[in-house]
Length: 437
Image 1: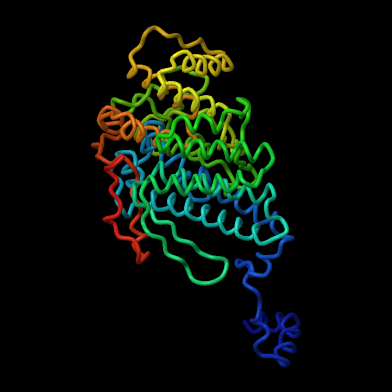
Image 2: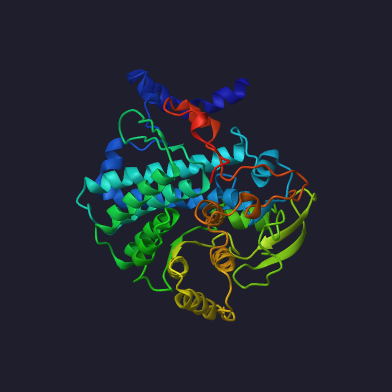
């Protein structure tokens, strides 16, 4: 010990001399994890702020860093796209539609979604106060905020609060908002983005988001009008990276690499036959046992690599919205034309009008949506719409039979707001009823 102390003495000498001048200055160093407000507000750093928003949105939808795969996995597990192929209790609860308020998986996914929303709205505020007000970046972050509201409205119960952490000052606590109000908040963000007349890419992305919110509100004609000029081949992608695990596409990693979740088919009696369809839009393959050998596992092919991107908004979805508006208007010719044109692009046979009943056409349309929008956090919102807009009984729409591990299903139709939100003085758990569509 004596020898080691003397060996360190030369290295310590400069610090001791510095300390003789100021005994406090050695400890006065900036916090490396906190960006100073002036730096954050510097207009020259706005592109870095925008990049941060893109990162948060990527994490909220399919991020690996949150350990739960984001909204794609949590909503897909709640619906019929995925099942939990391990034995973690919290994940089983989501699979069984009996998610407790203290469920860790749901709490994590909800947190990262709210974080992405707040970052996007902070960024929009900074853009609006800078020389880049009205730019593409400004419109883009507004639209991305809109998508976080859309997903909150589709996946969570009516009664979600939206608090704000401003750039400076105290937190501004939000009050519970109904599902209709949430979609209205989304629509307002998309309209604000469109009012800035952005480039085609951002304009199409924002228009698709607005149409999605309108569809969720049952305003079918307006939704179809909003997407009329969007090319079918348009795609706005959320990017992931193979650089480090934290930036992986979490759906690939947690489903394919780690086998903690599995692609599902015919789940709980009512689930669509994703595994047996043999459909190029929903590729799966049996890979053996799941994470802890408890159940079988099927890999998904929507995201085949850690750097696989996610399609947040597509021209395909635009045509699906037009098809549903045609269905609502009893325009069978347009309904079949839209679907057949999309299928032709994927090498699939056409859909034909064989005099099917309206209910049969609804089934057909939502099955097509499920295939085209597989594992993009649309399916739970569609199940809720079948109940809310098409008067389907929940027990005919949601998985109702036992889970893969044999657990009984609950009666939730949406994910609950986590218990942690009770820290918000404006919120009580009574505001959220997860059994309502």
